[in-house]
Length: 240
Length: 244
Ligand SMILES: Nc1ncnc2c1ncn2[C@@H]1O[C@H](COP(=O)(O)OP(=O)(O)OP(=O)(O)O)[C@@H](O)[C@H]1O
Ligand SMILES: [Mg+2]
Image (cartoon, rainbow over all chains, first blue to last red):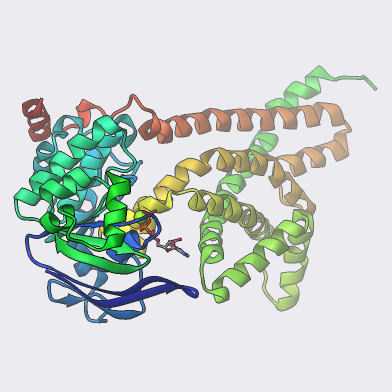
């Protein structure tokens, strides 16, 4: 479970996040959308402390993000993250990409990590590419590896920052399929995306962010039925 | 006096005295490169630091050692340290001088390499829970290494020849020994040609070695490449067969 309570952040004098509050329950899939530069990336990066924030509080599974007795490592193990441009480690094979952090950070035994990593790669349909390097894979394949790599840490929530925005159109589907499956299996997900089809089908809730504020927080049914703010309606009509 | 003395030339070419001088050149290059890399790495990390207490001294160091001739640095170390009651051998002074000087240049090379590591991968590593040391040692340095092999190789090549400057503090390397022989036998051209051949041989051997290292490091970055099925443990080979 993730609780955002009045989160505030500025770059210099510029307010990026302005009193953002929301609660994401276990197993819930929340899609975050909004215009470019509205603070979506910043918001989810605050959840795993990739971005510091000044005001308010974020609690992830009972761990307060900024408290000194919560280790960053423990927090980040709970919250897996997938980036827009994959960010696979280019000097490591696909399998090593997936295995590195469970081995290095969680110090789990090599044999079991290897087996679990292979199972994850199979799950995203890429086991036969385990020994290749990232550059040999297409964007869609790399993004699926990135998802497997995040899952290898056994996170309880997953954060996605525009996971399909850097992909060629024909590869978007394969990545969304993996995400959809993850959602059906009950993973708690916060997902920044412009894929409104995905949001409509998979999301339980939509957070509409504009100028650093969560303007709408409603069920995806209400959102797509137009029971949302005028700003969100304007965004929707331009996005779809 | 003859113009060119073939007998003298071959005598020098096979002279153990000159050969051992070349070995000294070789190991001085090696030692200065190792120490220079270690110090250069520290300087590069310091220079990139957000803390001015680290970055300013590093910047000062690089400025000082890149802004003055190696010859001057060697003489200052050789003649200056005894005044502080620190007595070191000529060899120690030569290696220290070369290392300190090389570190300044290597620091810049290593820094550029670290800057070129994609910041997104660093963020991904952070998101996976790695601490700064793990990120440096497992993600940043290995990738920076690949990028800096070519300029690093250039430095080795340069250093092989730059070691000759240590003759100014009478370090008995290849150049100094050639000069010693010139002084009592006057066959300048023959001796220096032999020295040139030795340098050529060493730099050529290094070129060859560097290309091999480069090819190895580039392997992950070629599109049609894989670590090869040979390294695949049996269970994985089976797993990937199943998946297919
Ligand atoms: N390091 C930074 N320094 C200053 N301003 C920043 C920085 N990073 C982001 N910003 C600003 O903060 C605002 C929010 O950025 P953010 O990346 O969170 O937006 P976003 O909603 O994810 O946009 P996009 O859809 O383009 O990804 C933007 O106006 C951006 O210009
Ligand atoms: Mg963004």
